Length: 181
Image (cartoon, rainbow, N blue to C red; front, side, top):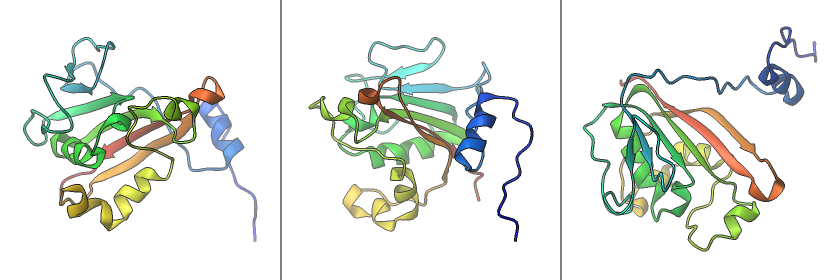
């Protein structure tokens, strides 16, 4: 039995990462054409030019659905927002609803074990690397306790803990909506 893993010649830093970690390849390459419909949820002071930037109080993520028709958004980004929401599962269901097949959601939140998460009293939800798998593979996340009934059609394309310093560790995740069945 061959216990060796075979890798091609590394050309990028991500290739070296894949070899070092002996994990399936993860890519976080640019995938956003400049045309399309893009939304940032909860931008605070960080607006993205050419995107819809939805923020409180005009849009209250805890009380309002996303103001878009089904399947009309190409990409959604959320930076340090889902961790502040009372029901991030309901917002995630809304994100799935409005994304086109193949559309993506990039989410960056503090990792639950970081000082960044623990030092902000407005944080309501914790995220770990297994949070997404738990949401999509566990039925209790799509039942009445969260006020939604959904069949998840989001797949994890990228999920990695990253940090500039240990105290500010974040979880960087990219989810992609599968084709409609």
